[in-house]
Amino acid sequence: REVGPVSRVDIAERLCITRAAVTVIVNEMIEAGILRELGEEIFYHKSQIHKGRRKVLIDFVPTFCYALGVHISSQKVIVGISTVTNETMGKRAVAISPETTREEIIDTICKLSEELAEYNTISLDKVTAMGIGVMPEMAVKMGVAPSEKLADYDSLVEVFEERMNIPTFA
Image (tube, rainbow, N blue to C red; front, side, top):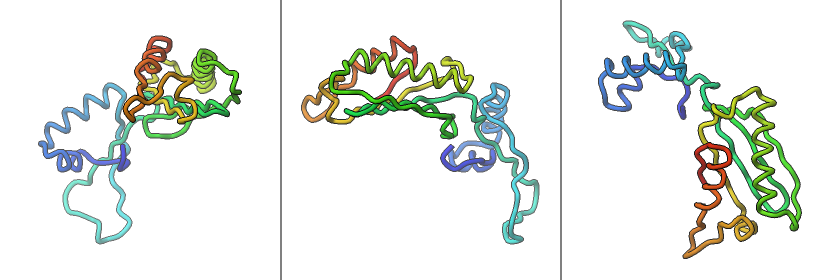
């Protein structure tokens, strides 16, 4: 995902496994709709041309799964949704005030997530992860106040995993 389209040969070399093993795994992932073949590698300079078969490039199917990102600050809550290839599908922000409660913020995040998914015609079942960032000024309100210099997000993560049934990370 980090390097873009890549060939089976390149994967085998990077992972130090056989080409045959990569072919079997990649073919299974293509059948499952996770990967797709893009076609043969294109050469722009004669010095890049190699003898033998051209490499067939593969890449993730962008719509195979999605991720939600959440940012909580003292002024607003932002929720975004992106594809597995890191293409932003959309984001929404809602202003909050000092009087906004933890429960209201959690409700807002759930609502914005559902709205984004619906707007982009994405089933929340295809959202495979949610990441949450809480600005330091919101740590106490959100229940992630640091203990021994590390913030404890467990209770917040648990709330979202129960409410949305999406693995959540902070």
